[in-house]
Image (cartoon, rainbow, N blue to C red; front, side, top):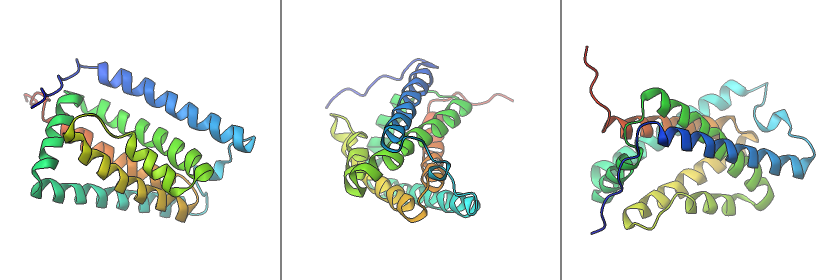
Length: 192
């Protein structure tokens, strides 16, 4: 059985993640700008229905979290995956988890739904999203499968709303709940 990965030192994951997601966001913006000459505001938000799109995204995010919670209760593989990811996440603070959730939700959706999906189509964007959520360890295969399902949900939300508000909101909700919960497994209790 392979050895579990060590936790990253405090702040290292946050700094690395923030830098990585800023590069992903810039890459998505450059791709969109190269294809369209300018980046339309409507790609991000429809001013006439932003609240509906935001609500849709929050609901979709909560449904994805609930689906994972159900799988985790029934599956040893899901609990093993969570243990693996919790060790990688280490002891992110709540504010770091929130910041990474927002950055990753915005950056990944900008790239996968804002740039790749319009250029290459729904299925290639969904498959690429899943493949980039993987690793060599068998425990991570379920992460890839769940990322495929989540990517499909996010891609459908983008196709239906024609903007990134719902996918970004859903992605951010999922990451905020999961990162906070995973980091909480290593976070020291608050001493009041």
